[in-house]
Image 1 (cartoon, helix red, strand yellow):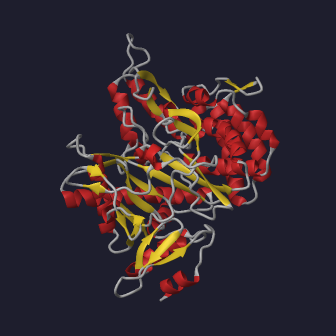
Image 2 (cartoon, rainbow, N blue to C red):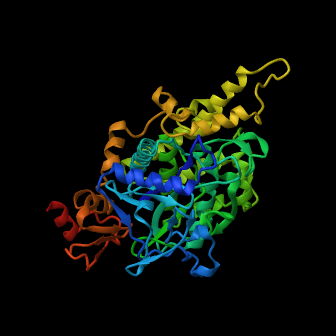
Image 3 (cartoon, rainbow, N blue to C red):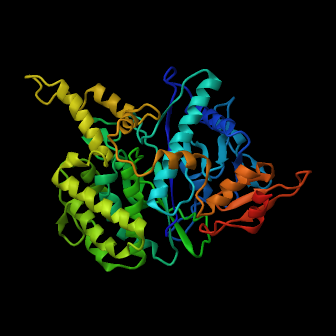
Length: 504
């Protein structure tokens, strides 16, 4: 059982005013979310957060930190249109309208210039899908309320590029043992993160950070990966991020913060992204030396090579001089990970992993119900073909603006092309609509998210703030005394005080 979670930054646009301030829009979107939840939300507790601590054993000074690293203290001044800082009760705090801790244990907030949904901690790939889709539903409902309250529409996009050179993230978090060497962890995990694009990519029209070259590729994030290992998340983005902020007992856990992944609207892509990575981490924690044979000679270059290879046959150079395709690396990882499938959930991941790899290898478009980039390529291919002529037998060229527009329309929440495909029964689902609807308002019951979401839902009157590993209570009538309840064990789903308060 591994604790995992997904964070999604959504693209946000006012279609009637393209120059609208995205920070202000994101702030008002969070306000709309809070209003829709009534009083069943809480502000965020930044106490104990330290985003500048590095897994490699050092801490970057605040003076040397780029703004993207300072995730512990945002504040938005609407009149000035700027982000500033302030203190309250000894810790950094943001205005209430920039944060909402929700009844399902998630956090919905403004992250720089984007609204972000950080899902609650879960213990399976299946549940990761459920609460990830719940985040899409929460964000879309907030957008609808925003439109009603503000009298202006706001569109949200679950993608990773804006077409103008900027990329925003969909991050995964995996709890791993502190006893595992971080150097070994990074080295052995990298081949998987580089090659899992074959089933986890969301697809993208355009090559290069600005889409300056025509073409189609597997991944939205590939062109933005520029280093093997590093602390940054928006500059020189690394394949393996080194932030050492476990939000749990530090001497027992690391939190692996993965920033290379795409935003996925297909359940199977999310399921495999989380499930296969969890199994590879199990092999790494077991010190399985078979992983060493898959080390890549040039990992950063390989990210783009895999993403731009629609044939899935391009050879990658391994550290020992051998060569292998991304599919062959994934098949080798699958065989290794069979040894670490310990329950029915793992077995389901193995079976799906094996089936998708086989379909990709034998008939690419037979995987279109499961693999998002394949479905997008198929849909765009049909549009291109409709415009074929003797002068242009391939139809629309990849640089045609209509294809870029369809790529964007694919990811729009509510009525995007991916959503329409799913409604038409053309997308295989892992989670049911009933499970997702329940997860909008209810936290997972097997992690500490039960406590965070449960106390916010049942007793918002006594919750001053909440974080990943804390709940701050204010039970005094004069509001002069705060109690900090520490939840350092992510798998501890009960607590005497919080359970009593929820029951009472």
